[in-house]
Every structure is written in structure tokens, then in C-alpha cells.
Amino acid sequence: MKILALDTATTTASIALLDDDNVLATATRNTHRRTADVLIAVDEACRAAGVGPRELDAVAIGAGPGSFTGLRIGMATAKGIAFAAQRPVWAVSSLAALALASPTDGTVIAILDARKGELYTGTFRKTGGLVEPLDAERVVVPSALVVPEGAITVGDVPGLCAHAATPSGEAVGRLALAGARGDVLVGGAPTYIRASEAEIRYPDGVPGALRKPKT
Image: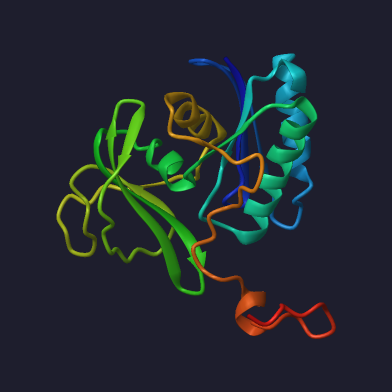
């Protein structure tokens, strides 16, 4: 089964072409202020793999949480390709994809920078190429990390082991192929978790724009 997989939850857009367990091609781009580079990376990976859109069986997307702009661009890109190729869009958790990057099996806390002094976190049990969500743990760390086995709390805990990582397209693809997915081609949206800055500042709509209908 050939799938195009991408994650744009951070400023590192990661793209991968997979044929079942085989990775055919990958591409990455730093999309800070250059969000159009996501399309360039997709084109680069597809050309390297020699795979056209209609040869795909599905498109997999990391649905967040993460950067609001990045998630919208990733979802729009995935849906656009899938609509054109008449294929499904499989959404998986970007935090789960991040947890899959842990070098060890066991309990993993995946952490992404949510800005404003906040973090997105997810706690998982990793076994080989699979991750299973566990009850969330409250953690405080200074940057986006994957925290492997035995470090489900942080601070002065002896033996804390962590390494920097971002969700990869390959991990998104592997999770989707493993069945941790849902078809979001129609009506699906990224997992934002919290309201956007515009929604917080203008709960009734941006001044000068169409107002939300009163309920």
C-alpha cells in the first residue's frame, strides 16, 4: 500500500512516501515564514519516489496539536491531493507520531511547544512500532522533547532521559498503516485543542468581517 504522509505541526515540515514498511522517499523543510515550502517538499518526495498522486492508496496527515498555521496548511495540502486523486485522508495524532521517535520502548511523554508559555503533551506506551495513549501526565520542561521510559515526571528526577525531536512524516505514515487513523477527507479539521488568538481577541468575529450568527 502506497501512502503519502506529512506532518506540519511544527516549523519542520516532514514528508514521506511509504510502500507498506518500505520508505520510498523523504523530504523536510523549515517552514518558518515559508509555508509554501510544504508543497515543494511534497513534490520533491514524490519525484524522488517516482510516485504520482493517482498511484497513492491514501494520504496520511499529522492532525496536531501544534502550530495553527502549520496544521491548516498540512490539512489543506493533504485534502487537496486526496480530492484530486480520489483517495482517503487518514489523520493521526502528531503527538503519537512524536512518541514513536523514542529510542526506547516503554512510557513516553511527547511534548510540543504550544507557545505562550504552554505545552502540548501526550503520554504513550511505546512497543516497537506502535504507540498506545495513556492517561496524561502534567509536565514542565523548557522545549519540545520526547521523554523515554521512566521519566513520566520531570525536575530533580534522577536518570531523566530526553532528546529533541519533531513529528516525522514517516512516523505519521507508519501509525496510519498500523490502523491508528480516521478518514477526514470530508469535514475533518486539525486538532487545535485551544482557541486561536483571533478567536480569543474577537469572539464575535473580526471587526469589519461577517459576524457570527447569534444563537
